[in-house]
Image (tube, rainbow, N blue to C red):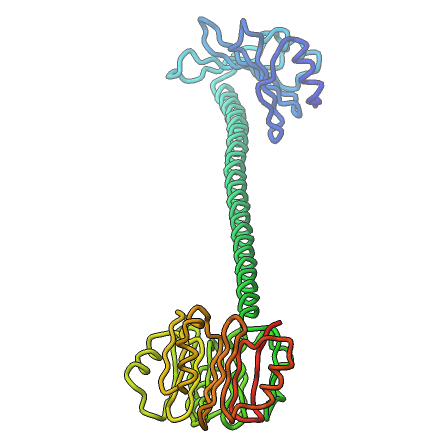
Length: 407
């Protein structure tokens, strides 16, 4: 038995080149130098069998097999493929179409026909073994190359998927950051608008109510507070939600159906009237008297900023577009509103008495006018003594009033 590394070293020392090596079949195939490159030698290093392939110009291709070759004889074969060891036999093929001819052992006479056939069979078996080993080598090489191609294809798909996943993750992160930025900007705008609204509607609130337990102690986030004739109230916050207490049943049912959300403005009259306006423009209102056509058209088509209902069907309505309509209001209030000096002022709040000619009107520059014996004296005293200027006012009875003001 030969050791493969020493075998390769011996062949290299004699100028041969290793073509292939099949570890399963324990065979190494070497090629002689370039001047006789068609000569090859197959060494089965576990059985010490050596097969040389020689291509003669005249005789054709010949294979010579030697069994139980010693290390010294192997060196001779590497030096000369035709070296005689007295242990081999050969076959020659003159053409691809001619059957293989088996000759005698080296240095021996011609065997009989039966012996020749046995040798030929052994030769064919040896060749079959060699071919099978070569096929195994090529199949192993093909399989390794196929596995390599499949691995490279799978690796390319994995890299492509990772790149796509990374790009998608980056896109989602950019979208998340954009949404966060939009939300921050919307919140900033919302706070700015609320600050402006609070500046316009005032920062200080004074009230005297029959039922004030549910009234927010800090009204910075309350944009509308409507007083009911029974002494109750409805408080609408900046978040468009509301709380109510002791309000007309019909108005209460409407607020319940609307789940007390998306509210913009609420007002209650002294005789069961109410007006509810939502942020989407939808309105609900009840006016027991017979309103004129202009009154109905205005309430149905315009955004109401605030309103006041008074004695014997009188009313004053201020719209978001700055226009206003009134009917049946006290003559003195009508003269104040029509006064040339007041035309350049904006009306902030109006209260009309439901028992007589009383009224209260506030302008955006802080100027206010009031009249009537039924106007609460507490409001008059507070207005005279307070350092704040009134902005809005809501009254229903002596013990129920609210005033929002600013410094």
